[in-house]
Amino acid sequence: MEKELGEYFREINTAVYNKLEERLAKYELVKGQARLLLLIKDNDGCTQKELANFVGVKYSSMSERLNKLERNGYIERVSDEENMKYKRIFITPEGKTAVVQCRKILKEIDEQIFKGMTKKDKVQFETYLNKIIKNLSK
Image (cartoon, rainbow, N blue to C red; front, top):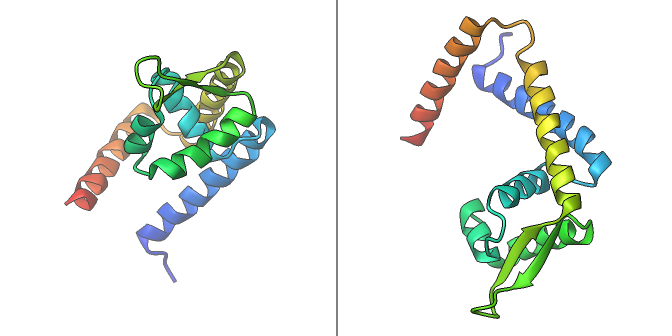
């Protein structure tokens, strides 16, 4: 029996997730934490509330996610000088090192995914993916 096309997406998603988890474990990170760390690196000094809004989670959920990054020494939370009830999130030197490794891991997985594809293949595939994303956003 042939697979439904959606099943291929689920298989790809699972395989990528497993590769990421396997590679990130060395840095005591899971996929969501790595994504959050990359976001913090690109928005150093943002507030916990801003991060929660960007990711689409509750403030309290963001706090839980940040706790592990802070325990691992990847970030630090500093009270805002103008409004002490806000915490600004900053990446530490250890966090910057982890970000470099996360980006390297993501690049290597991308290379593995698209191994053997020509530039033309990739452009065509991207076109299809954009159509799928557009269809799902309606």
